Length: 198
Image 1 (tube, rainbow, N blue to C red):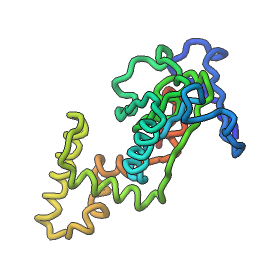
Image 2: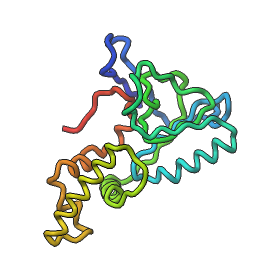
Image 3: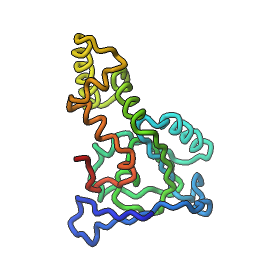
Image 4: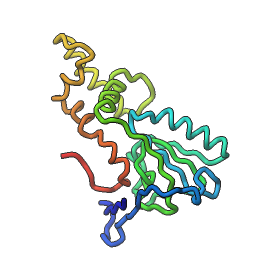
């Protein structure tokens, strides 16, 4: 199917149209995973086997001697999409970034890979991941982890078991945002597409 997007940052609507398509035709002729082939992007959706697939992609890139780049910031710290370079031939891109890797221009048509998961179990898994997280992350991520733990601490004093924390905290804005913002298909919209949850 074909997607048209009008990035909100562009001044001229006629220049802003970004068409790209998904189809089921073979990409063998585009030679993904070859130095002169189509760029490869693995779109790492949260809690959908992404870390395992990302590790496999890294091994594959290393074996093929291809440049490999990780971006896990969802474009938050990336300069304006209009100034982002397009994906380069022969490169492998992975991470928590939407299609086109924070650029609003397609350039060479990339070979995209994505894994999706049944949404209810993915939301529960993301909630549990944040509840038990103890690694490196941005200050904003840690702030949300601490807020979630404070909510759980209050629920524990009310006698709520750990297995029921998510259900009993959906009235909290932080937890509600985890549930309502976990739209897996938003990863298939380039940066700048006006999309959200009402």
